[in-house]
Length: 423
Ligand SMILES: O=C(O)/C=C/C(=O)CC(=O)CC(=O)O
Ligand SMILES: [Ca+2]
Ligand SMILES: [Mg+2]
Image (cartoon, rainbow, N blue to C red; front, side, top):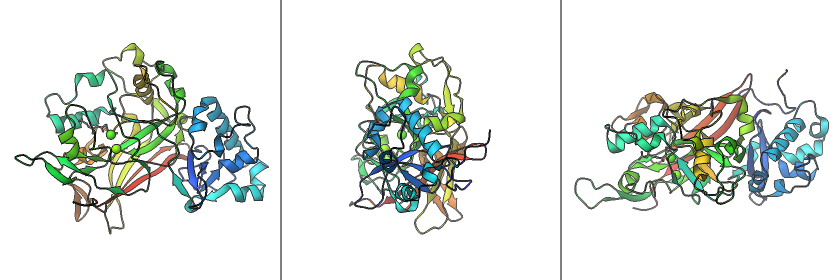
C-alpha cells in the first residue's frame, strides 16, 4: 500500500506528517481566542474553522462544539470512538487526493497557519498531575545515590508502580522560563540547614500520559481497558531541585523540590498515531498481582534525547539518549493502579512516567544520575562541564518514532534557567 500523503508539503524529517496529526491549542495573535489544532508539517490546522465549515461530518462530531473550546478537555471527554473519528476525518481532509480543503483557497487561508506565526498554549486544563517512578534503572540509581548501594530498590517497587501527587498549578508550556527555586537544603556540616537558591537544579526527562475519559469515583479501571482512557502522550521535564528534595523527602516524598515548575511539549501525540510503534514491555519478575496483569503488555519505541545549551554558546550539547521502551511499568498499569482504590481520574489529568533512564551511563534521564550527584562533571564542549544546571542554561527534550519513510515526533520541550528572584 502506498504511504498516505498530504497535499501539504511535509519535509522528510518533519515530526508532523499526515501519519501523526497531534492535537494542540494555539493563539494566532495575542488578542485571538485559543483554538484547538492539529500539526501538519510546518502548519497548524485550526479545527474551529474546520468545524465551522461543517467538515467534521461523522456521527459523533457533526453536532459537537468540542473544537470551538479554548482547550481540548471536552474533546478528550468524548472518548476513543470520537478521537478515532476526528483522526480519520482529518487524515482524509489533508490527504493529497481529497479536494475539499486542497481546492478551497479561502478555507485554506483561514484554517492553515504557519506554525512560526502562532503561539502554542497548554492544550488541556490539568486538574491533577501524578508522577510515577517507572524506570528501574532510574530507581536503582536514585536509590544508590540517596540511600546507599545496599538495597537501592525497595521491595514494594517490583509490586506496584510507585508515584507521588505532583502539583498541577505550576505546569507550563514549552518555552516558559524556569526561575531557579529557593528553599532549604541539607545543613553543610552543622545546623541550621542551607537556605537560598537551589545549588542542585536538575532536569528530568519524562513523558506523560494525558487522560482522556475519566472514571467514576469508587469504580476502578480494569488494566485491560486502561488504554481506552489514555488520549495520548507528551514530553515532560519534571525540573527537580536535588538539594531541596534530598532534605525534605523523608517520610512523605517530593514536595517543594519538584513543585516549582513542570514543562510540557505542546502537541499531544495520540495513542492511535503511536500504534505502529508498539513493542513488548519488559518481562516483569515477580509477576504483578492480577489487577496489574495485562493480557498484552505494550510499550512504545520512542527515541528520546536531551540537549543543554549554555548562555552565549551557539551549539547545544546532547547529554543523553534513551528510549521510552526502557520503562518497566506500562502507562496502562500506571492508570489501573492509580484508580484501584476508587480514586477518580478526569479528562485532562496528567500521569508522568517518571524519569526515563536506560541501562547505560549515557542513557540516564537526569543530571543527578549523569554526574552521579555532582561527583563526575559532565563535559558539554571542550571547555564547559556541568554538575547541575547553571543560570542561562537552556534544556531541550525531543522525541520521535521512525516509521517507514516518515517520522512521528513530539516536537520539543524547552526551558531556560533564570536566576533566583532574590537571595
Ligand atoms: O529515589 C528517590 O528518592 C526519588 C527520585 C525521584 O526524583 C523521583 C521522581 O521524581 C520520579 C521520577 O521522575 O522517576
Ligand atoms: Ca519525576
Ligand atoms: Mg515538577
